[in-house]
Image (tube, rainbow, N blue to C red; front, side):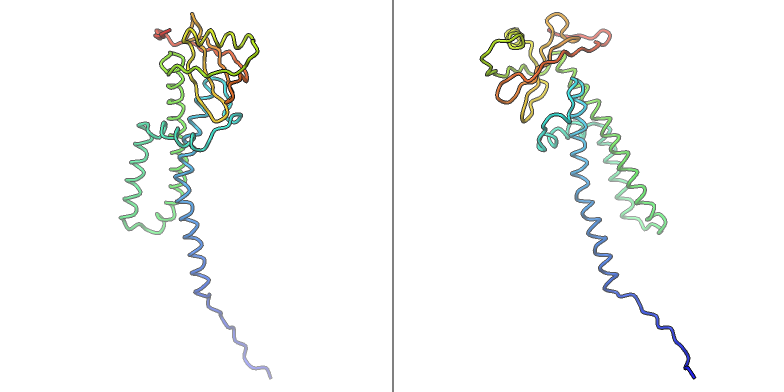
Length: 225
């Protein structure tokens, strides 16, 4: 006769549980450490992409150094809407950390955090668009610094002649200077806020290309020559 059969239950190893918790904690810490850098990079790229787009320049077609992106990130991050959002988020996070919350609320907090990050990116994107438009207006109105890159082209051409005339009449305004090229706008002599000729100049002083740029001035807009 066969004896009675017994089922043996194997308790989960505590070591495995601790290992899973350690991996989860390390993952959370890695995300928390990388998230601020990613947001700052997004802010700088959003601003530069929108600013260059104001002059018809595709940001994906130019070389922009990481340091340049990070520096320009403070332009949208310094806006009122972004600052208010950050202070509100810190207040909510502080409340949740100092208050005993039920398990359901703790689980929902992760979903809330994801939603808050998405909303924060939209706020940054809007601030970047506003700042880019404002800076572009400084270029069109002649309020940005006069910049005269030195050309090294020996041969004469129509582009170099126009560039020289713009330089002599102090109508050149710098759009942006990047690692491999500089972009300057030659404002029109008679319609400086409505028409301009953009020059893309390489780092060795050669005109890469030129492009006409037009915009519709706002009503009662004051534009200096």
